[in-house]
Length: 189
Image (tube, rainbow, N blue to C red; front, side, top):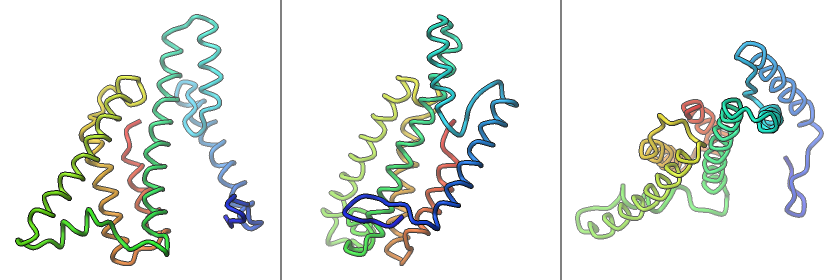
């Protein structure tokens, strides 16, 4: 996408790709709906509509299923946005490569041990905040009941820190987005 006055604009060459992706998403949704017990997996519009219908029909079991599908999708969207924001930050030409909290702790010698400990503490605070948010998401049904919020937080932070190291080594935005795509395949459904 090209940017103009701070707003994303579609470039003509992207339109065929968008059409292809829409067709692919529709095909995936249709296949899942037909083969997996009428569940939409690629788009949430169908699940949202069926959630509303099941609520109107006072069918709590069906409503819980639909709400769970929408919630899981939204949790994945939030993590994807967090990782995409990391890729944007790390690949911006005006920003230094890597992350001070990651690189600083890796490069500290014994004489800088207090700095290294402070960076470790700050990274731990970020991980704890993410873990707390995932715990809330689990309680609200946005994550599967078997999901471990602590493990998910460590996983997301490890991916973000790894992206920082990759960026410092010269990885561009496309390479970082490749890391995100692979990482999201491991996200709990």
